[in-house]
Image 1 (tube, rainbow, N blue to C red):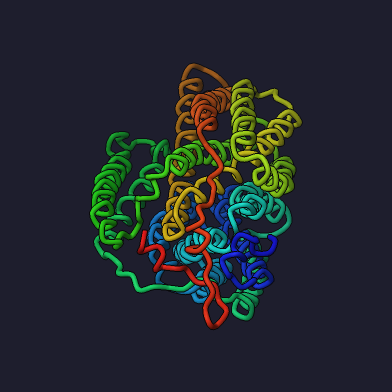
Image 2: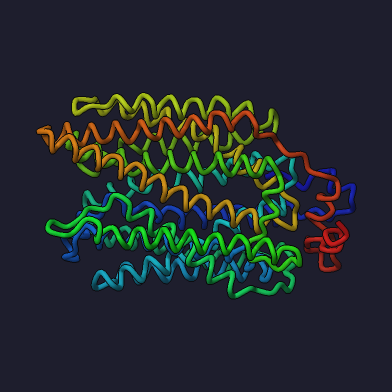
Length: 511
C-alpha cells in the first residue's frame, strides 16, 4: 500500500502512510492464520473419529460449530467496530483465537475440542470485518484494488490450502499438531499486535439492540445449522422423516428469525441504531456484488468439500496426495491476487469479472464429466484453472462491494460481506453434498459399484454448481468500479491534534 493519496493531502490530511501500512499488514497476517482454521479439519475427520471414538455425525460438528459461531458473531461486529477502537478489538480477536487453539491442542475429548472450536471461531469472526473496515478507512479508492488483492489471499487462499496443510500434517503427525503448529504463530501475532497495532479510527458511542442480537443468532445460526444438516446420513432403522425434523425446524426458525431481524433493522436504521445497517443495499453495485459473491462462495466451498471426497472415495488417493494436488491451485490464487488488484485499479471491475466468472463456470461444466477413471492430473489442471478464475473474481468483488457504500457504513458492509460468505459457504457445502449423496444412493440401489456410484453423484453435484455459476456470469456485467466522492475523502480520514486519523462524523451527520 502506498502513501495517502494526494487528493487527501489537498484536504489537509497528515501523512500516516508507514503506520497505516504496518497496521494493515499485521491485520492481513493475523487474518490469514485465523481463516486457515475454517477448513483445516476437513480431511482429519477420519483420524478424529478413531482417536476420540466418535461417529461421523459428531465429527462433522467440529466444522459445523465453527461455521455456526462465525454466523452468529459476524453480524455483531458492525457494532463492535463502531464502539471500540482498532487495537482492543484486534487483541480480543487474537486472544480468543489463541486460547481456542491451545484448548484444542490439549483437548482430552470431543466435548472440549468442540468448545475450543467455538472459541477459535469467535476470534476469527471478529478479525475479518476488522481487516475490511480498517482497510476501507485508510486506503484511498484509487489504490484499494492493490491492497484488496492481499485480502483476497486471506479470504480465498487460506481456506483453499487448509486441506493441503492438514493432509501433510496427518501424513506424519497426529491431529493435535494441526493446533500445536498454529499456536506459536497465533501467539506471535498477538504479541506483535499488542506492541505495534495502533488505533486508526475514532470510536463513537452507539447503542446495542439486544433483541437484534437474539434475532440475529437464531436467524443466521438456524440457517447455517439447517443447511449443514441437509443430506446428513440417517442411521439404519431410524425413521427418515423423524431424523430430518431438526433440519426443518432449524431452517424454519432461521427463516422466521431472519425475517424479523431484517424488519427490525429497517426500523432501527431510521435512528442509526441498527445492529446491521441495511442501507448498504441501497447501492446497486453493493447488492449485485454481494449476490455474485454468494454464488462464487457456493462454488468455492462446494468444490473444496467435493474434490477431496471424490479423490479419496473414487480414486483411492491418500490425504497427503490430495493435499499436494490441491496445493498448486491455492498458491496460484495467492500469486494472482495482487496482480488482479493492480489491474482492478487501472481497468475497473468488469474486465476482470466477466472472464473470471466464465472460467469458473467452464471448469464446473468440465467437472460434470469426471468418472472413476479420471486422471488426477486432469483434476490438477481443472483446479488450477478454477483457482485462476476465482482469483480474477474475488478482489474486484470485495473492492467494488465495499467501495460502493459510504464511509459511515463500512463496518456494516464488512459484517454483511462476512455473513454472506458464511451462509453461502454452508449452502454450497450442503448443495454439493446432498446432490452427490442422493444420486450416489440411487445409482448404488440400481446395482452400481461403490466407486462408479460416488462418481455419478459427484457429476450430478458439479452439474448443479455449473448451472448456478451461470447466474454469476450474468451478474458480472453489472458490477462497476465505484468512484470515491469528495465528501467521502473528508469523511474517511481527518486530522486531529494527536495526529491520528478519525472518522469525520460531523460531515456524515450533515449528509
